[in-house]
Length: 364
Image: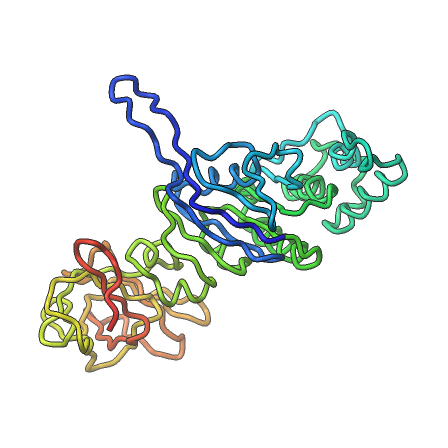
């Protein structure tokens, strides 16, 4: 099911009676979610991603704009008639019901031609439970399950209705690190098996990048960039996107372009043909450093962390906007840990420069 968001805006009234200033949670958001794809809505807290999800679900009505499921305008349609499955962060299971009863619950209110027999309900519930691999837990109560198992029940309950669109609101936030990894792999498997168009809301960029077909990066209710995860990581349109994506995060420096060269401090580190002379902000991905004895950029060595296949070199530089600079190099490269400084050359495709005022990308 293709989902189209057309100039979607959501404004909340002010809580401050004195200022009476409205809060724009989502601002003129337009995007087409292709049929059968998993889309990650990504951004920091307060960026409008959950509000967007709730407008798609019908739990919140947009101030302006339209929502289409396929060719159907569902903007004014009630939640129960949209054919959506919704999974919340806190599972929202009924504690007095068994797993089986929780999964079957959405089927109890079906009426008319959609009404199912008891056998049909049970068959649907078992099918959904097998899909999320909890079919052996059907007679347990939620308090007898682990967090990961409870989340699977919530997903099965959303899937049992055979929704046109599956909506997941930070479904992994309450799980520990290992369970998060395991459950996100399960969500991806389930989505591929069912082919249901899925919108996955998260503030965890690693989570979104690992399972999404496309990611949508938001900031303060405004769409910043849309694309395949690797493409957005490799080609950020502004400083916010560059800083938000990546673990470890991008290293940021104050720099300048002079006579076709990029300077960090006094060092000319790259050729920048066609770029006007100006003060700029420089972003360098951790993997964008090459350790060279006569490298252009000299940094003061703080620490070397051996991480198995990689080595993380922690340094400082007067022009750095971060407290420390973290570069990731191959473990085969030997680092003199007794040295006071290291020198790097930079990989051009891992270096981005941004306008000092607007923070928009400057291409070279």
